[in-house]
Amino acid sequence: MLNFLRKLRRKEMKGTRYLKYAVGEIFLVVVGILIALGINNRNTERQQQNELEDYLIQVSQNIEEDIKKAIAIKAQRDSVIINSRKAIDLYVQDKFDHDVMLRAAISNFIEFYFTPNTSGFEALKSSGFIGKIKNKVILKNLYDYYAQVEKIQLDERSANLFIEEMEAQWIGRTPIAKVFFYSQVNINDLGLEQGVIERIKQENSQALKDPAVEGAILRGGSNAVIQEYYLELIAVGGKFIEHINAMK
View (spheres, rainbow, N blue to C red):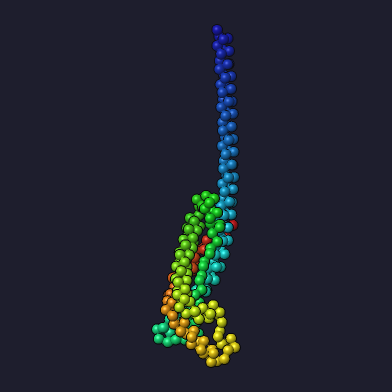
């Protein structure tokens, strides 16, 4: 009986050892799996972070192109405002100067279209990585920039529609204006006799007194709001580029 109990005891101890061994093996397997998952997750996160950075760099390059366009258009619009306000000063004084009015008319009947490159931003949105941007400043700059883009495009669209309407009315009423508006040449450089030049200026002056021309000039001289939009766009875009460059 005693031997039987001893044998039973040894079997129990042996079974316990096997159980501990099995539990240990399971534990090691689980730990191994967790470690592998952790490494895999880190690798995935690193890969996604690299992809996100690539998207942001592309957006930054697009914005850099946009800023160059914005600076060029703003400079042209500054010229429009200057020419328009010189003409407006003449309106206030009830005076007329052919050359001043012609420059104002020519500059105002030019349409400006700001066409940003949104390919990087659209790709970023489509990828789903935009939700992985942890830097709140970068995210805010990104949204602020493209909100500013929309404001500029809306304002430019409104201005261009108005100019197209004024131009159509002007040319429809005064065909001669079409010739000298689109030629954009200095009459004095045409080699004409002085009497012919004076007659052309007189006829052209009548065309430049058309209400459509006055309407375009008045709007051009007061359209300073969009210039502020361009300045804001340049500032916000510049901050975004700085953040992305610092991230590289």
